[in-house]
Image 1: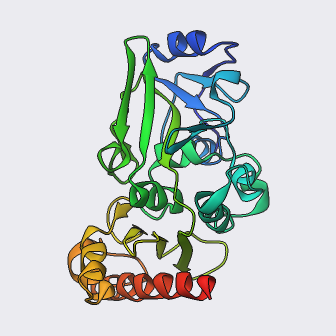
Image 2: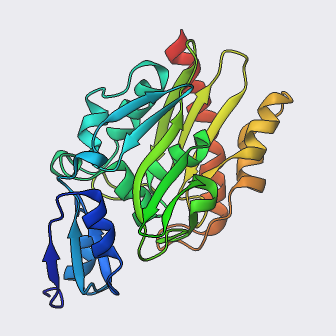
Length: 275
C-alpha cells in the first residue's frame, strides 16, 4: 500500500519549520523510521510533511549544569557511538544497542521515538525512568514537559499538532553511578515484550524505567521505594508499577511477572558491572 498524497517541505530554519507545522494536517519527519511505515500502511495521514532532518538548531548534544540536552536530530547511532560522556553516556550506549537494526539506528532519533510513544520503546522507558523532560516549540511559544507527563498512552503525547519536540533533557548521572539495560523479546527483530533500565546512584538509590509493562514507558517508583527499604523491588514492579494490557503473545499476569524478573535482573546487572 502507498501513502495518501501529501505535500513535502524542507525548511531551512526552525522558524520556517514552526510556520509550516501550523498548517492543518502537517506532520514532522526527521528519521522517518516510524512515521513512513505508518503512512505506507495508511494507519495515519498527513497533508504536509515538514522535514527537519537538516535543521542546525536541532543538532548536537549540549551539556548544561546537571543535565544533558539531546537535540531532535541526534540519531540512535550517535548515542551508540558515545556522543554523551560518563554514566549517562554508558546507559545511552547500552540502550541504543537494543534499538531495531543498524540501518534503523543510522536514521532514527531518540526524540522521534519519544514522540512515536510506542509502549515498548526503550527510549521512553529510559527517559521516564531518569525523570527527563521534553522541550516543545510552536509559533505560540516554547514549553518544557516532564516525560512522565508527555507520554499519555500508546502513540499519544502531550504535544499539540503544531508543536515540534526540539530536544530531550536528561539529568547527568554522578560519577560512580552503575547502569544497566535488560530486555525480554520473542525475536531479535521484534519490539521488546518488556524492557528495564536502571541507574543506581552512589548513595544506593535507583532510577528504574520500564517499557512494555504499561501503556507508556514508565518510571518504576514503587520498585525504587522498595529497594530503598531493603524489600524486593521486583515484587513491587510486578504488583504496583506494572499496568500491562493484553498482549498477543502473553497474558497480563505473565507480563507482570516478567516486569518483576527484569527489574531484579537489571539491578543484578549493575552489580556485575561494578564488580
